[in-house]
Image 1 (cartoon, helix red, strand yellow):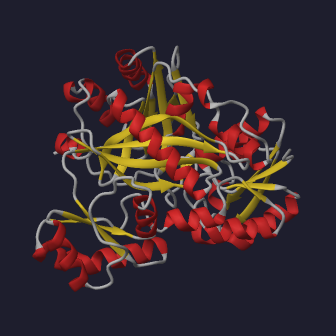
Image 2 (tube, rainbow, N blue to C red):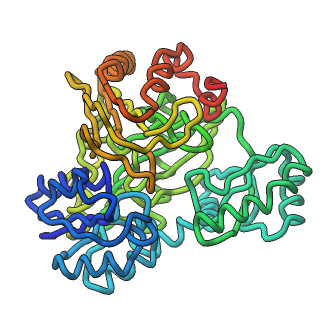
Length: 444
């Protein structure tokens, strides 16, 4: 069993991993930048080590500093959380070369599924539907125009090595494609260090449904239900729920194909297979995220499975302690991402938290590393809390979400609490009629 984990991340996910370590009686060592010296993970860790100045490139993305910290701490494993180095296969390889268990999938799986164009091709070979698009990357504007004309507009230009909406652009005709092609290449290169692009047909209306999987190193792969992540702004998720309002038949197809993908690539640890679903419930593979997801708590609430603890046990070489027949999805869970942003302009709003009162009561969970008096730094992602509510059914979960958001008090910075209140009050959301472009229409 792993005895000491270096947590190579910050904020609420670092604290989430630390708590899982404590539940397993494992030491948790937190690394931190100078900007995070007084953060809650640092205060609660068994040990904390500074790895550099505030800028992420010099701290949380600095592999040399992180590996030095692992050596000083005498860690035997590294958990990368999400973001930063979580899907960096070179980092995973370095960890393994230094006799550190990497709490995540093998590097070759990250490399394969991290290249979106190659992943599409591999998945398509399994007979799983993929969105019509380019066969591999498009390297020139002329190639992009030909693919778009063949499959028909509108089309999405997407980063071959990325995700999270960066490097993604919508083109409705040849002129728009010409205007945005080089911009998308530049964004992809800046975000992922690789400027390759591919093209997909734009599916509309569509919902974003993802399937949570767990795999161990003994060949067992389990499916732990699905999540609806359709509420997005500029391809960034805002609210997620589990399960999704879909038919039994579609759910069975999604589970079958997600399992097939995971088994094909020899997946180990927690991961997510993502799909688009059109208005006729036809589904199409989008990508696989080879890490724990921001929205993993809704699956935990709906299944009772601690995904982070399972990740650590899997990395220790353990078999999964339960089987597929043991996985039961009950009730309904909704996650609201509370960001330090202006709810109208979505500009970041770092600063000091002057007032901080968290909601509570039945069915309410808040994952956060913020406290009253904490200074939210301007250097990182704006997520400050994940408000997760659970009910016996979707209606009860929505009602508890409204209650919790009304109780949530945050002053000193701007936040998206008011946006989530408006979403949960919306009749369209209540009826489950939200596609991936609904939120932007709702806002403007």
